[in-house]
Image (cartoon, rainbow, N blue to C red; front, side):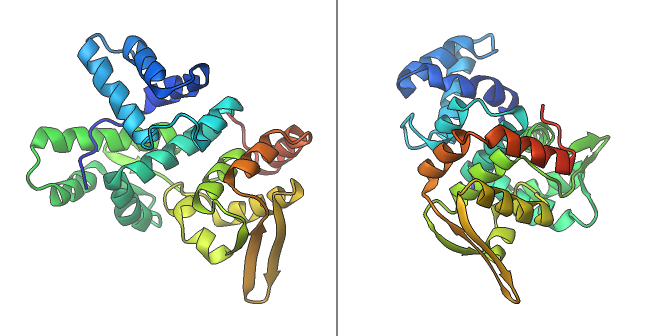
Length: 262
């Protein structure tokens, strides 16, 4: 467990998608150090390192996240992908998601003081200033990237729909190899407990992906509820984003859910 004092949500959304202009991480890091919106060079260098260690921990530029950026996804898809990658990289965010946000779904909110108290329990040796920065970073992460909103001292959130592309990106991160997987594994995992995606909406996306030929079979017979992924993660993302009927199917899904990207 480590402190989470810099969510960097806004700069991640604005600058990370530009990585496709570069052939290697050192060049991209140099770009970030020159262009991040902070006056001090030391701050730009520190935040550039933070971004790369969080989103590119393997020190290679060719990752599924870079592939996603190369297809110029809509903003809502970007937010879903980056929120997921943030939670996966930051144990403190994962803990808060699973032990505070998730259990509070029936109520629909947590208070700033509840969040601060839980962080004080996690980090009793940290200063009050550090606790305050962590509270701010968590609130900003959820309001910027996961459709929560802040009213006075309460963070409101609920189960919601994402985008088909965002669903696919996270689905293939959780299940990166071809195979047969249960609905239970899907519904008990990160797509619901981190992203807060609605169960019925996720079920419908499986059928949409079957229409793309990415899921070969969806079975809901009695107690057997499972789906079969046909390709590995790289092949699946490529097949989806290069599918000639992708825009038509995406528009159909948006019409069915009333989702507007942006």
